Image 1: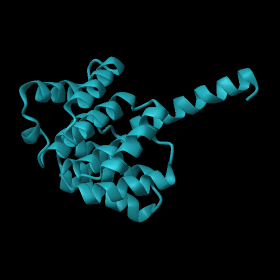
Image 2: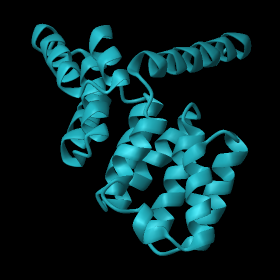
Image 3: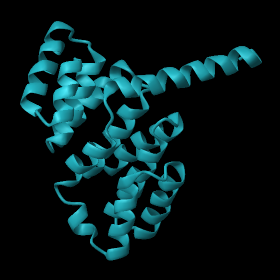
Amino acid sequence: MAIGVAHIEKGHFELAEGELQAELDQHPQSKGAIYELGRLAALRGQGTESAAYFKRALMAAPNNPSCHANLGWVLVSGDDFDASMEHFGHAVMLKAEKSSALAGLGVLALRQGNSEEARVQLQLALQSNPQNSVAHDFLEVIRTGEAEEALGPEMLPRVASVLFRAYADTTNDVVEEQERKQQLGDQYNF
């Protein structure tokens, strides 16, 4: 799978797909391969395929915040606003992808024509992570009034290239959060 991820990072999408599909053929329940195929589809602008892979990944790992945030982005780019809000909400509650999810809620509000709510959510995303370039970009879009252009068909690949992290990175977040919760539980006998 690592070779497939490396191909994605280098922009060699056909090679990545071959490696990831081979991994999935050998290990049909490989959460990592399923997640990476979702990320690859998003980078290609294939929202329907990407959503299907992220939904499948969530069936295997329902508390993966990156899966929820990524699926939220895919769904908002495809106009499924209610479902995107649900997945962004899960990502915010799981905290590991809070800045990405808040930026997603901002873009969702912008797509629904509510630029003031969009501004609030994007500013919250920047408070959570001042380096969130997507939040910076969309605040600039609001300032300049160029929302229609920015929300076009190239939105999903652009967002995916900036925010969607490799599966290995996302599992570390989940493990760290679970370990932290376990430590708190042990400390307070939850």
